Image 1: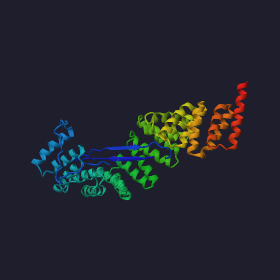
Image 2: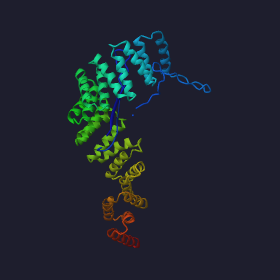
Image 3: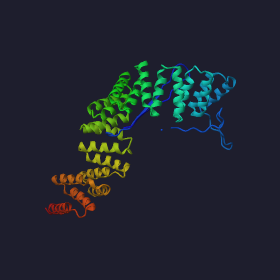
Image 4: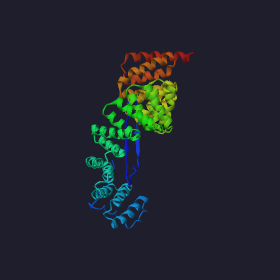
Length: 404
């Protein structure tokens, strides 16, 4: 499972505006922007407009940049104006221009932590991590106990692979503000990357306790518990994630997956179906849904899920063989034979799984699908004596049955 937390805090005044987003991929037990180069090192170049085409209406962000540019021409040495202009440029996605304004503000107000703090975050977005860390460290020397600054420094250090430094910055943030959800959650992420699963889970639990209605901490805790093979506890964490946000596809997908592992197939299928409905091209998710439906006895539903998985994963022998076996159980013999033959062409080691289903169908007196699977085996292993014997026996039994 993959999880990412990204943040950006642009500080115009004493108060900090927070933004925290996450993504968690629903797998079983298992992004950097570029900006246009600026020609003038002191001012961003003006956009070149094609005179033959009508000029587009400026956005609200662009209008704010233009307004503040006019103010800055009158107050070129006012750090507050430069700080506001930098933030306006960042919101208009002119990151290089924003960085220039923040650097000027930092030179004019060397005791104000906000210019280097915002500069550091813009440089992170530009993927200039060395410069970003220098700017954030400079901001921390000015404001050593600013929680949001400490958290963003810790996040940047984690992205740069400096996990020990990240842990120190985030531990300091937690000490300063133990009820900070961002601090606790990001400390958990750093500890997890360091392989310190127990303290990571403890930090995740604290984050969830601070903000029980936030889905992220519950999801992250569930992932860690699942990796530790504590599946029942993981299921409870994912249930809390679903309760926190019933529309979270990640919550439903992960809950469905762990319930599948626990053998609770009907409930698993319900949650996996909710997640898979809007993600038809997620092969592993569709495979899990197929397994849950198959184990619940819904072979037609399983075949549909396996077909979507096979389409998403055309080179997957497992998806093809599961589709073929599900089709055999539904009586679609010709397509079952084709899919199983294709699967064996991709991976001959799947033969035992097919033999087992041939035996199962034979015991159920479902002779036609058993024969279709046997012919699929012979398409790949034409000299196989056991398959030849099975084919002859099944054909003979089918003739006798039809003769009666």
